[in-house]
Length: 198
Image 1: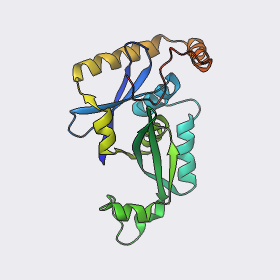
Image 2: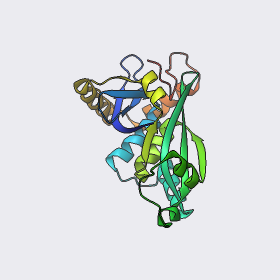
Image 3: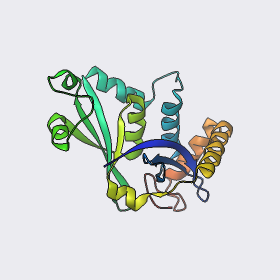
Image 4: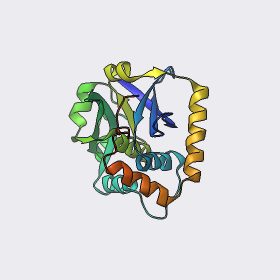
């Protein structure tokens, strides 16, 4: 598996749909995952640490995990099926860290399996937003990285991120709601969410 980092949010040039970009440690490959505007807002709020007047859904999920004595150990994006990324949240009890012999880093996959309390299916966008808020790692199977990655162009990434920030600054809540309602109406021109297709 490859530990990925969130490189930022970009805009698809043709559909104007937001894309979350995950980058590998070598910074030579990144995986684009198409998401919707609301998911992009949640991820950006987590990345920027922007205080919200009321908790967003992912803030609530993080608080529920903490209240239940659970820890998001890691997010694993493990497959692409029917042009859609698949992810799981790997949870464990917080007190697992205090057990004798437990270490912050997991040495083997067998130890990881033994400590794992549950794996919960999730959309990659939700999993990423939650990982950002909990400081958890994001992992991707090498086969998925190899299938979906693109070469990194740092200058183009920065331009896309600046363009998306300008777009967010200019869009009103009413326009965003209208856009989301038009997507829900089944417009075939809309890009699928959490999809690796370009």
